[in-house]
Length: 475
Image (cartoon, rainbow, N blue to C red; front, side, top):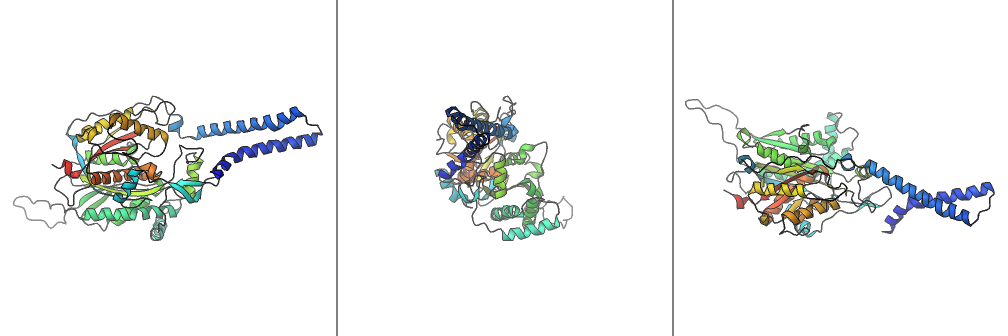
């Protein structure tokens, strides 16, 4: 606490000292005698004016450097149209086959959930990461991560692919692959247990053809830091080569649908909406990873005035993690053991203004999307046992979530029944929504009751879905 206070007062004290030094030099050089009025002017008034000007300039600079979406977003941005929950397509579901993760709190979701529910997880003061004032940074880091094997692969890959990851630290890529290795391997074990696709039937009177058995499409979406997307994709493709009976394919970025590049829920919903015909037997694989716990990342976050500190309580706490989600169109008889949960169709929209903009915070958009999500799943608010979100510690997001529970889920306690993944594990970047989805699926399996999942890390974009137990909805 004392170090933090000294860090805050250091610059004002330096300014006062410089003004006093200038005053002493001035009176020495001018051979003037100093009176009581001179003492007040030079040693009291001028230092106060200098410190005040410094604070005003610093405040103005922070305002100018805030992200454009926060500093200059119009107060009346059009809300995205909300589609009524009608039609058979909105009743489609996905079976969550696997939801594996790697976080600083552990790799087993069922072991992580009790501490998450009890609010015992939160980023701590780092022993190695310091801010520009020399104070320890609050961060959530996977300690003791052995990246040696992954670093060898990264080195070989970069040598054969010039230009990839240019200007980046290969140690970051090695950390990403190490975080992903366990979850991806466990998810592949689940997929390997799926029954093979039936062989195509021969036409009546036709001779049987000697063709290889059909392969199940593995529709893969990669969430990773932009400089490393191609590297992670190549690594995942190499790992999938050992998975028999699957055809690995990657969903590339679509400039016309930017929301699919930051939200695993919307990716799952787009896959669900298209899970008909030739895609009825496909599997969706979401691979997500990110890390922000190096000195370079902390410095970059601090340079944008987005790092949590005593003077910036609305800043981010760096974190890292990975998640792998496997899902396919719901079919009650297709897999053993039973899937973790059912993911119903997603309701998505946009707030009228950023949640952290000046003015009153409201949860109207989130409440509307929640009502649609419950309608998609044929559930009532009383059926929901928890709200699982990617919300962190920042007060605008916490307030919006609490208002949602108070208005739409009145049977739940805003603290006890809100599993805020960002608050527990820190800023997870590209992996945030996927890790939240994995924990929501694990919570449904553990409690055998539906949960509401909300992705709201963005200042305006919102998506909400209901996850229900597999057994409860089986037909």
